[in-house]
Image 1 (cartoon, rainbow, N blue to C red):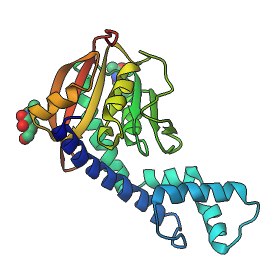
Image 2 (tube, helix red, strand yellow):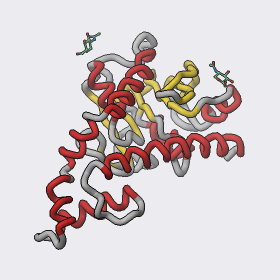
Image 3 (cartoon, rainbow, N blue to C red):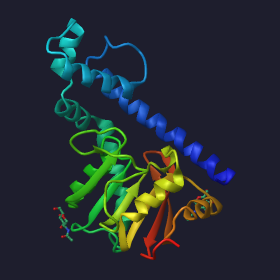
Length: 241
Ligand SMILES: *[C@@H]1O[C@H](CO)[C@@H](O)[C@H](O)[C@H]1NC(C)=O
Ligand SMILES: *[C@@H]1O[C@H](CO)[C@@H](O)[C@H](O)[C@H]1NC(C)=O
């Protein structure tokens, strides 16, 4: 991969990793996890879920506390009532708004969101009236996001009208990530990427990751105070050569 793309992606990657970590920590510290040891938050969550599922009786008072508090429903309810949730959902709503006049998004659209985290973008789409939204990430986050590898999506070709991701930077294999997202979008549909603010040259490099789409529009946007660029690719439906 081109060095400057790699540099760009690393930069974006760091930003998203930070956001993800802060979100997870936020969820953690608001779910009586003061007794959990320090370590990787995502791992701890899974570990804890496993403990809760597998052990018939709580071994310690800490387990008992966790059993009381960490149901996915409670975790989500807590997150959804936070101010951070609201501002991020609103920011996604702003991001999606220009897609309506372009004819790329309507209430009837089938939308796929990849690397969706806790599902802020799903909530934004639902609130705007788009009912059919599928969202995946490496770690599931019920009820809005289920688990799938973005590099190997469990969907048929051309089944979505719109594919969206703000997670390209976190992808281990950016080319594979983009090709998979693009594959699931129908001809005439669009793949939209939200990435860290980029120059025309960097846009070209990201555009080159696509195999059967052409650049429709690039927009510099502000996303909760971050300078970002929205890259809108229209799917030509040509089979990859
Ligand atoms: C889309 O759904 C929203 C929310 O239900 C509604 O307010 C809006 O009028 C709908 N848009 C169209 C074009 O039907
Ligand atoms: C977006 O901002 C970058 C960096 O400031 C600039 O190079 C680029 O031309 C801008 N793109 C658009 C579409 O305005």
